[in-house]
Amino acid sequence: MKISELEKLNDMEKKNWWYKNRRTVITNFLSGLSFEKILDYGCGTGATTSSLKKFGAVLGTDRSKFAMEKANSNGIETINFDSINSSEFSNSFNLITLFDVLEHIENDHNALLHLNKLLKNQQFILLTVPAFNFLWSDHDDALSHYRRYTKKTLSLVLENSGFKIIRISYFMTWTFPFIGLYRILTKWKKTESSSLKSIPETLNNLIEKSFILENNFLKKRNLQVGNSLICLAQKI
Image (tube, rainbow, N blue to C red; front, side):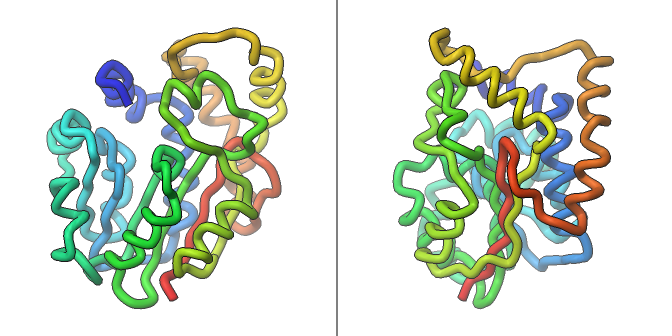
């Protein structure tokens, strides 16, 4: 991700409805669980990482030095990205999280095999990823995505990497038909920036509140369609 995108992300990750709603989904998915040691892999600027502190001791790591600096300033203890990829951290963590990270990695299978080794036996990984390749747009190109996922493709790569699925669901569901239609109608329009945009605070808060019913439903049941996927899996 470009520095300009990361600078925008630092502010948007704290305030934008999309990030705030994703944090709600994440915390609902982990409700009632606790972990001795958590690694947020690809922590970005740390706003989402901070929301994990209620579930255990959290460390963050990111390939971007700029992102790591921002995460530090946001109160996140970080580990050098090259260090986390060494054998020093094998069998170290109880939960590893990747929030919209896996789609940025060219070989997702190899990445998951490596993260499997960082986990203690029978411990957990939690991921969010963008859903459905037909929603591909310049937004994905601008953010250097390699793919979008379905329940089937995400489950398959996790299972082939030594995990079993505990729970998997789509989310951002009620906006799915609108974003799908928008992406289809604007495929001809080429831009070099993502669709992450700042919007007026009142509208931002209204959109955030519009997910209350959906998120209450998601606490108990999985959703069958949405713009994103969330999955909790266990090392086997």
